[in-house]
Image (spheres, rainbow, N blue to C red):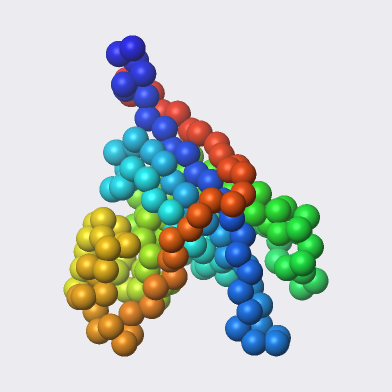
Length: 185
């Protein structure tokens, strides 16, 4: 029983693809990114945000710039013929995004990047994540994460310029999960 209390875990889930259409030519899919952990590395023990493929491309680029000495995991390849109507393609991409996050979360050097934490645990846009990580916002990284869905951040920002990328969700798809266990010595 005592050894169980010392075991840390991080469980990540990419699920619930949602399709969006901006206009006739611009469509995209985003996914729920759900994190459950007891790791001291994370501010919140559970969180869910919505992110799209291009957001993952941005995150990988940021992590790669910050961690030059390690080989970055690959994202599922960009496909010019990707079809939102093809459920196999959507599911394969979703699994690939989850595999990317699983590898990232098993890499201690990458866990120190505040943009990763904001990406996984806040509803900030990518621009606001970058500004917050650089200390150019009225709120800290910890405040952005802790208050991400409460409206606190929007009160600190000019409401006209605040962009929220997160929605509440109802689970509609099975979880694809993994768990990484860390044992304290």
